Image (tube, rainbow, N blue to C red):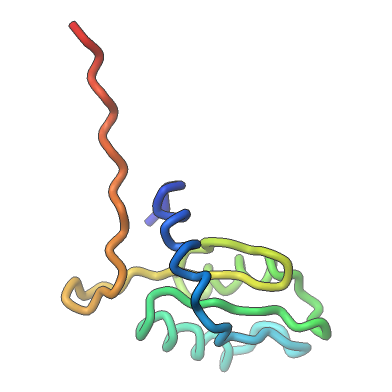
Length: 109
């Protein structure tokens, strides 16, 4: 699922109030970190992570790798922080309803 710019903006706004729950340290992205990210995405859909100073990865690299490993979408990378989103597969358990883009306007005829 590819996020539109409006949906990305909506998720960035929601992420402002989130606490950072993932920390990428000197071990980089381990199996344990991927499991932690998967569990958090399953429970919350939207999570915020941080790359510590002793990590060999940049925030963008860590975000892209985690997004691929967790089948989630990269929402934002700012400084050492990043935000990931994965929509819950079960509609009844979804917490975030993404905005829909308006269809293109029809020209006057």
